[in-house]
Amino acid sequence: MKKNIKGLLIILAGIFIVGSCDKKDMLPPYASAGNAPVLSSDVATVSPAPADSGNAVINFSWTSPQYATDSNTVKYILEIDSSATSTDGTFKREVTGLLTTSLTGKELNSILLDWGFPVGETHAINAKLISSYANNNERYISNVVTVQVNAYGDSSVLASSATEVTCALATADQNAVDFSWSASFNGYSGAVTYTLQYDSSGQGFDSPKEIAVGNNMYIKSLTQGELNETAINSGVEGGVTGAIDYRIKAATALGAIVYSNAISITVHSYQSTLRFYMPGGYQAATGNGNDWDPGTAPELIRDLRSGLLNNMYYTYIWLPAGAQFKVTQGRSWDINYGGSGGTLARNGDNFSVDHDGVYRVSVDRNTMKYDIRDGMMGFVGGATGAGWNPPNVFPAYAMGNAATNLFVGITDLAADGWKLIDNSSWNDGSNSVGETRSYGSNGGDGSAMEVNGPNFPNITAAGKYRVVWDGRDVDNIKYQISPAEEMRVVGDGMEGVNAWDPASSPQMTYQGNGKWQITLALVGGKDIKFLAGNAWGALDYEDNSGGSTAVGTPRKIKWEGGDNFKTPAASGTYTITLDEYAQTATISQ
Image 1 (spheres, one colour):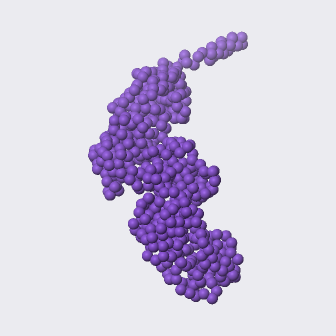
Image 2 (cartoon, one colour; image 1 turned 180 degrees about the vertical axis):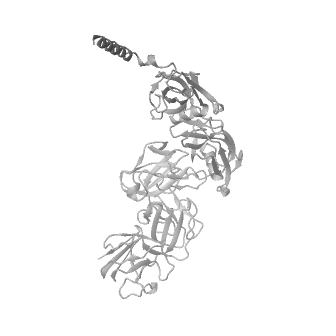
Image 3 (tube, rainbow, N blue to C red; image 1 turned 45 degrees about the vertical axis):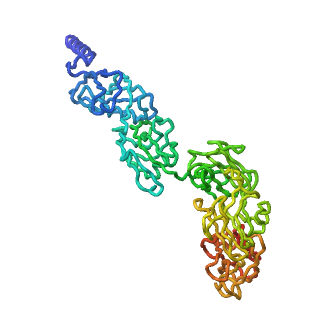
């Protein structure tokens, strides 16, 4: 029995000794549990160029982790990132069974551009390798390898359909030149925004102007008018020949920028039209668009006199007390003017006015002067009660300001010369911003007016006349003249009056200062309008209030065609006042 116990103890001791041995000592040489691979790169610095797009520029290699499996099934993940980018854009590449991988110039460049690296700047990228079995078990992470790299731009190549163009106002809308270019940032996966830049030839694009093209677009055509504008904006005077350089700017969404080659085009320019606008804090409150918005601001009138074209601009406009504003060349803030003390300044202080009223605002971009004064218009001349004496004009022979650049006046005219004038003294011939402007024309009703030009044609029959100074079309300031001996109320909204019969319709009484008045029995909910004669064809006023039926509240009027006025909802006796100077009609009980 003792022998048996002793033998059992020997067997158990043997089992314990065997069990306590390291299991690795029992594995064959090819069945290792693995260890971390060692990663290396064949370069420490690389600056690829577009020519390297298809070539390997970085070769990564690593040692075997010696897993207990077939090496052809081992999975490797190469991860590349950089502390210089805030994006979560780690680049990952999976390799199976191999101990090496490469990045081409195009692949590396796309990584860097996706990270937002500027072109030409050196940054460090960090690479590491993660190894594992095919099922992702036994993951090991290698050392980190750092490589200094640069992104390249692969700039566009620009071409043009012409190198010399003659531009003319008559053919301004015809095609002048087509620009085309290759894509920048070859291989970059994001959107690339292209812009056509231009500058006076030889200036090296120190202060380029830009024309937007768009994302991933490779052609831009310019008309003669647009090409001419690039020449004018680059300092080439209208009618002069000059060379302009053009190039393409390409920008990624993350801010990498490159420029194409430059192309020079000789432009035979013409005198184009420069337009000025008046954005300010008064716009919304006065119905002139959105505050401080050049895109919706009223346009100034161009002074067409010799030497003043594209230099002198002015407007007659109502402004509230404290209104601030500036003037812009074009409908953007790129070129804007303010000033103080009568001196115009690029990007200068805001202009302002101290009281409610109609103002005449004048600017001269050549002399860099401005003038802001009360805006007015009146009758002067032998045919008028003021005679040829401007101090007699205001206020007795003043016109009413109906809207921006619109005056309406009613006065007695004799068969003699006459003009319209915006100050109580004659112009002094200085062509300065503060000079008086008088207006005349060689043509009749509806003709264009000239500043400080000839007298209006003499009327053929003395009497009361309605005259309209109309500058609402800034390209064609004109005047209208028509008899003002009567104003009738026509329509189907009057008791005891034939409907829509001008000849039998009641006449209003002229009160002076553009006001007409009449008291009538009106039928509720019907239509009326005003006619300056006893037959259709005479000037007539329609509703511009949107169909208001308000009693005692002025309603805006218009004469360019519109809906009839609505009579009040309740029938009764009402007094109607038509104010041509204020361009309103009021129905009061």
